[in-house]
Image 1 (tube, rainbow, N blue to C red):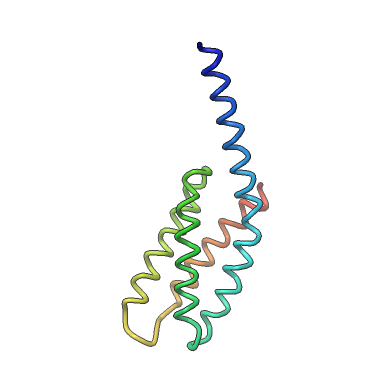
Image 2 (cartoon, rainbow, N blue to C red; image 1 turned 180 degrees about the vertical axis):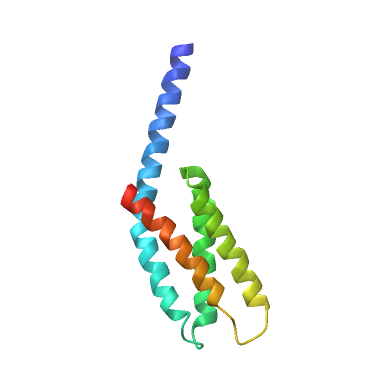
Length: 117
């Protein structure tokens, strides 16, 4: 019986390792997308839609980070998501300076994982 539990645990660990590898491999595309959205923050005509898209991507990233052993990245994504909620609910014109700062911190964390992964 214990041998079967060990086998199941090994299969589970191998599956989680593959998921982590795919996640790290997906970071380049995620970084590219966030960078394109960051450029749109500079244009008042596109900053609100860029914020909403950044928020949606940060929400997805936050959701998966706990499952792939990336708590810092997940926390940064959650902070970005929450700050965007505050910005969108606030006055116009939007002040996206801190959104940009948080996004850059998240991008730095993502890039470190790509370089180290």
